[in-house]
Length: 403
Image 1 (cartoon, rainbow, N blue to C red):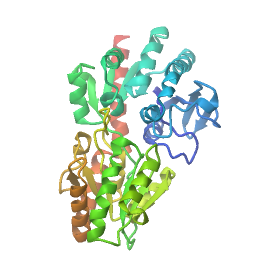
Image 2 (image 1 turned 135 degrees about the vertical axis):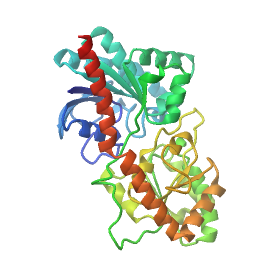
Image 3 (image 1 turned 45 degrees about the vertical axis):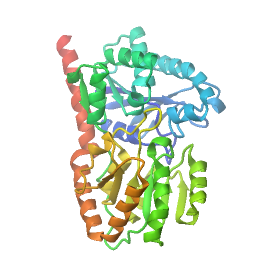
């Protein structure tokens, strides 16, 4: 099977710190299929290259130094940081369409897989109008495009794009309910398939005798991650456990303001900001930490997590995990069984949960072991990629019957 993947997030180089969930899915799909990827260009990288078994094509949408819409936190945070970047959107969309049109004329793809309804799904539909090759179109919503891109025009664009797709996948059960309510697609044409992680080779429990200590957050430093509420919990935690240290792994537009917040609380010496780190370094942080905390929230613009990959990775490393209670988290976390849930924006509850786990090492071990079983069963890439292949094969078989 020949698959064309459209995405706005993809590794730019070997040790890139960008999220790798699209990369990883493509790698698994490429085991028995030919996979091509269209992604945005960025300064200093080639327009076309082979990355393992994947052929990557990148579209330029402006002068290199002004190609700032994608990467480094994602498109929505980039626009929030500088609204003038919205002027890049038409060029981004048209350049993506042009490259897709070129490739679809050169290759016969069985499947076009667009990650995010807007802009990739929209670009795919526009391109199919001019290059009706017969490829089936699958769109995947990761959350931000469904929750945050609101308003009459954007909702109409989402409806038009998804109505012209053969299948819509979403990464959480709550997202499916919302997609049905918005009439983006009929319920049978919406499939819940989360992103995944590698629990077999990369995200594994620590070796015997590894000392696990300290608190950890891993993720982009953006509003929906709710990191300020974890920082607000730290003064309470330190009153009960004065030797604790919080490590924040990741970078983003809130980096400076979060550092200032630590200073204002007088806890700067207890909080370490590592900045962005290569993806292959993240397991070591998880394996050494006693507790990971993911205090995500629903942002002011409605944006929120889908099904959080970082939570899966922590569970795979058997790290006791505290997660704020939002819809996407409930697909993974069963309260008290494989993790702890706390209310959103509730520093007191975060502090109480941290103190409880610090005082109960047996509970940390129990939650960690149960968490790993959960992700091995439901979220390993071998499981997730097989679900996508089932969708793709069903569509291809349907197309062949029609032919």
